[in-house]
Image: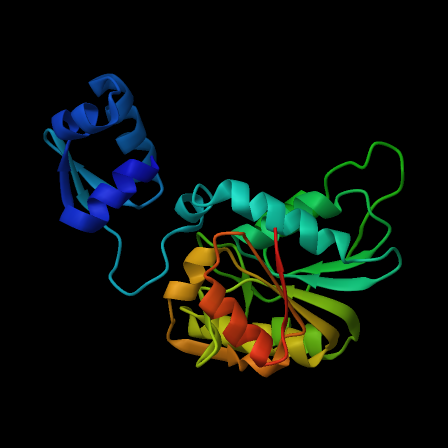
Length: 250
């Protein structure tokens, strides 16, 4: 499905025949994938193909992003979870990388506040009889699709508590603009989490270095540790280290 999405971004309208030729898949398989992406709001099916519904300048849907850079996100998630010690109180961001962090935290003896329902559902998974995560829910409004918490109730809950660590994802990150996100409601929530946490761990695969989103969450100096993947450019890493950020590539 990644190839289909890339084709949509390049051409906005794609055909079943061309996709089958490009991917060496059957037309039946392509039609099935198009139907799945249509159900997720990524595209609209038309005769012989599909038309993109991806808004320019906006963040792609959660279900689509979950498929992108998955291996890197799993490694990043495991590395972030390894930095959390038993007994900590942790905020876990609600995005796709946050979900991989949550998967690596299942069964750990920690207190966790997830910033989205996808992450909350993951953290609530059975721990096989060995204890598990104490789960705190922030409340607030749940944004459709992303299923992240937003609004006054969410930020108030975060600001009323004190956490050891916040693990934040992002839509873009750079030495110049710091950590950024597409949705402006997310800015307030992430900033409340930052204000309430002693340590800030940012998690971002290397594709995020090429993007700057509309809403600035924090400058680079506010981040203690950045965990990214091994394809991150050396020049970018040097800029981050010069700003005092510890960078771990996994």
